[in-house]
Structures are given as C-alpha cells and as structure tokens.
Length: 211
Image 1: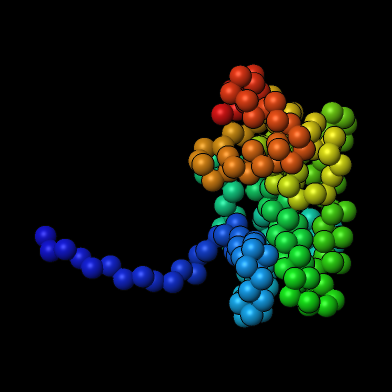
Image 2: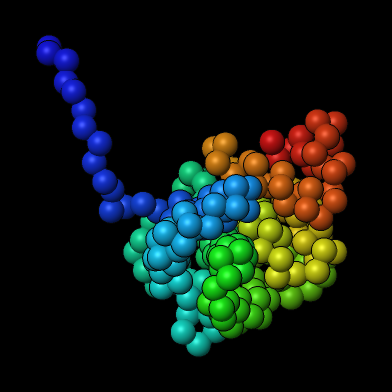
C-alpha cells in the first residue's frame, strides 16, 4: 500500500473550550513579551473566539445552557458529563482574561465588563441551596470535578464556598470523575487557588479517591 502524504486542513468543529483558550494564549503572550502589535493584530480573533460560547447564554438569566446551541462543549471525555456549570465557569474565566488583555492593549472601555457582572450573578444558579455547598449542573443537579474546578477558577464565589464545593466533589459518591488529562491540571489549579494544598498530596484520602 503506497505511503499517503497528508495535508493540513482547517476544522470548523473547534470545540468551545479551545475557542475560549485562544484569549488566554494571546493574553499570556502579550503579558510575557510586551508585544502589543501582535496583541492588537489578534484582538479580533480573540473576540471572535468567544462568540460561540457566548451564544449559549440564556438571554434572560445569562446562565450558560449547553442545550441552546449544538456546538461541541468539551471539558472532559466522561460521556455523561453535564457541561453547563463547567462551561459557565470557563466562559466567565475567559471573559475576565479577555478584559485583562484589552487593558494591556489600552482598549477602552473594557468590552466584557457588563457581561462579566451578569454572569457572576447568574453563577449562583449552579450552587446547591444548602451548605456545605456543591456546584451542580443540569436538571439532575449533577456533581462533577469539571464543574467544581471551572466555577472555582471563574472567581464568581467566595473562597470558602469554593473550598466546600471542591472538597464535596472530591468526596461525593456520585461525582463524575475526569477520564482524561485535559481536566486534571485545571482541578489542581483550582485546589491551589483556594489553598487546598493538602488535597494535592498523594497521601490525601480525597485525592486518592478522585485520581
């Protein structure tokens, strides 16, 4: 069988998580290099990369609803993962990063301030009603480490609420666990963000159960 030379092809199915990742790559590059001209050249790409995710926001509540758009919402390969809460956190995190990039580029007014405020308020809809709180997603109030990690990283909740939610997700009997490496570093980042360093230890009972 002859060797086949492959050619690169553009994809129109780039999933929402990677679209959102464009802005953090550009932000971190500009922050590290002070290459403002490249930042300005890519600014329209950064804004365009957020549009697909933004189209999932409920027009009344501004909560992320995965059912509003058939686009691929990838947070992890777990087949039963409800992505609404996790994607809400990821999009909010991304919008804040985009505003930070706009500030570096001296773009005024910052384009996402109002939407960030509305999404921060809407994030309370993903919080269980009674303490100790869990972050929940979908009609069945699913608990997952994806939801816990991204809503923690979004900065929408007080530190103690995030600690409760992360510890709850690590120990909950029905938590949807990560199946691939894509999610693990975000979980570790979330734990470190709220100073749950003990949960990063291999000897931790919670970490051992989850990992």
